[in-house]
Amino acid sequence: MDLDKIRKGLIDLEDKIIELICRRYDYKKNLFIYECNSKELKKRYEKNEIKGINLESYNFKKSYLDNKLKDIEETNPIELKYNYLDNRPYYNNKKYLEELEKDEELNSEDEYCFFRRHNKIRKYSKKININLSIKKAYINFINELCEEGEDKDVDYPFIYDVINLQTISRRIHYGVYVMEAKYINDKSEYDRLLLENNESLILSKLKNKKIEEEMLERIEEKLLKRGLKKKKIEQIVNFFINIISKTIEVELAYINLKKELIE
Image 1 (cartoon, one colour):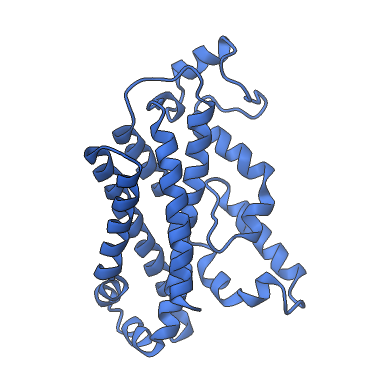
Image 2: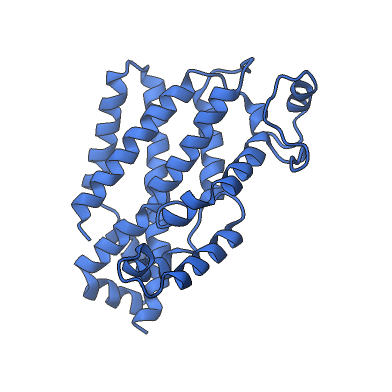
């Protein structure tokens, strides 16, 4: 695996996230989207101002975002199955893992199959899913970034929330690829640290201050070109610092799961 090519993929996802955040910033907080058992949501539904709610499956005790994400993932399982190395579900992770196992068995004899070519990575990455903490961090970020209040039509802010959450999840779980490349490039050293259970040294080895600073400077420059105010740029850059931290969390989880290979 080429780490430079992987970093290019990260930059592509970074650009998408910046674009989606800026689009979401055009709307108000609309916090009732994220509230469980929301009175505002019920009121809007009764006035026929909220579309696309399936009463048979809708759970008003959960948030609008939770319900819609669940519906999207249940109706689009193909995307989750075939982009699985960097794409994780926000709901029903057990079903997702079961489907991966079925597809692996069906294609086990095909040497050109995606699952065969990525079998080792799949084995140690499939159970890594930090989407719950990603969703929590994202909602807190929107609460900080956007203007107070509620829009009359929440379809667009909601759509940007969903696409943003999926893209941010992909960007963070891309850490699986990053860690695999790092491991291949310095296998003996990582094996030694794993055998010593030296997690603090592994963690320091995963961090690359120069690359991280370059990334944050690049993001700040892109935001400046969009004409955002200094305070908003700082908030978005701080959110990307959180993304870096969570990517390293994924990398660490992945390398620790490979320990059984050398024991």
